[in-house]
Length: 569
Ligand SMILES: *[C@@H]1O[C@H](CO)[C@@H](O)[C@H](O)[C@H]1NC(C)=O
Ligand SMILES: *[C@@H]1O[C@H](CO)[C@@H](O)[C@H](O)[C@H]1NC(C)=O
Ligand SMILES: *[C@@H]1O[C@H](CO)[C@@H](O)[C@H](O)[C@H]1NC(C)=O
Ligand SMILES: *[C@@H]1O[C@H](CO)[C@@H](O)[C@H](O)[C@H]1NC(C)=O
Ligand SMILES: *[C@@H]1O[C@H](CO)[C@@H](O)[C@H](O)[C@H]1NC(C)=O
Ligand SMILES: *[C@@H]1O[C@H](CO)[C@@H](O)[C@H](O)[C@H]1NC(C)=O
Picture: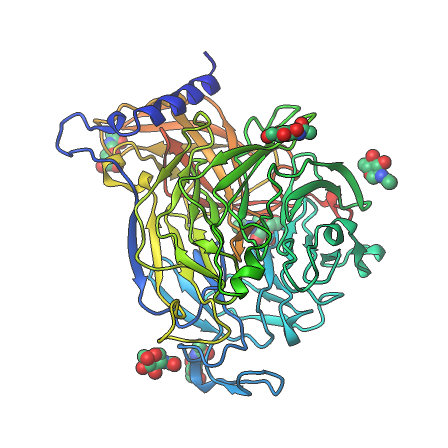
């Protein structure tokens, strides 16, 4: 049996004997079924976490909108925002963006001028967050922030060619960002502009064709965009998808619509992930997407009239690289709209946040779903979902979730209203910030958990495509039986999360050589970086060592740009 077959067999077995396998030998711990743990990190972060992005200094940049009125956190040193065009307040000495430091659990208010409401973003190859669009004076803005202790936002109010509200960003292999769509914008553009053709927006009929009634349902805003392994973009809007060559504006392939035809994009908001990419050195790397939740096409209009329809309880999964791709449907433990999909370091998918009735929009949903679902893509169909421990906090419209390097998922936001309302409504503005520790962080698995000894996080690794390097991992306890064939290294691109979609999220399972036992519960082995920026665009990633499904704490690495892909990719 090959090591891959062994891994797959193990994944299969581990799902069947989920708990028993992990009983410790001395019986000191009584194994229980791990369902994850919630922890309140901050009772009040001052703003609504409408948008979140983790940067490689382990700080999360959090953004609200600027025209909500006064937030609950002041700008430092008496700084104020003067904006005669702001519809809520003209002089505002409160912050609408903050930086959250994971290590110290502290906040730093940031200054932002232009309106970020329903904007988008992605991190460039140098680790800088590039944040685009929004509403009003922010509709054409490009804002950047570097990861550093005193860095703040830089804003160019005219950085985009057209107004973009509810658009989706993705990093490209050549280090550019593509910004797709936005309300009433059936086109895309690049940032930064590198070619003469970059200075005009490019018409994309697919975005027009997938619009249900402009300014009513729409159902195709914040389209789900993923870089496919062949260098084209997979673009899903409403209930269908295309494979798109952004270099010459051609539709390479049209995929079948999701069976049932229900929409999955804003405001019938579901979510999507690219499932982990494996066998990266193969000629034919496979890519698969998973889309979960959403609402029926009437849900938004009816919610406006006070009738809340059941959210969709299906996930649709498709191998985009198949010759004749088609969706297969799976049923979640319950219906969900405005759910986030977070890829975990071990390749499982966490389905978190959202509601079971209604749609996205102000006060358009009821019945929050407090319990995340875990989806195990490698388990047999019909047996992939597990319901985890619930939070006590409703995370409705304008809530977010991001994965941290320590394996926790940070959860914030929820404000289904157009201003800050703390009392007297069903779902008040939510300023509490929590973490969810997935089952793999349960103490009963601590013996199995590897630690990456080398390279370490204090010396960020600068790596090139195809480069191999030595990794050393160790286990803290001599009692654990290490299964060398069940160690893998995964590489995670931290996404920009807003409106239930995590832009740029991807996880790659890297190739690794055989483990050499170096004594003292340590193992050394070679790890190889992906062969091409089509598989992983240049930039910062988190590497995790995973043993029997239990991930280590991650380390940051930087994957270098390849100049030959500029300026055309
Ligand atoms: C935040 O809310 C608390 C409690 O309502 C209040 O005392 C405080 O002044 C508020 N802070 C800001 C900066 O608005
Ligand atoms: C506030 O002002 C003090 C004194 O001028 C300065 O040292 C400090 O860096 C300022 N803080 C911020 C966050 O700008
Ligand atoms: C677009 O580019 C692809 C790949 O380079 C090529 O196969 C295709 O023919 C081009 N299409 C058009 C319309 O130029
Ligand atoms: C895709 O699968 C669905 C059932 O899930 C089936 O009804 C449909 O005909 C299939 N489409 C294609 C193009 O094979
Ligand atoms: C990696 O190398 C590039 C180019 O030499 C440099 O600009 C960058 O700062 C390096 N990054 C790290 C994390 O050392
Ligand atoms: C083994 O590891 C422990 C804990 O990390 C360390 O204290 C000890 O010195 C190591 N022993 C050897 C022989 O390397």
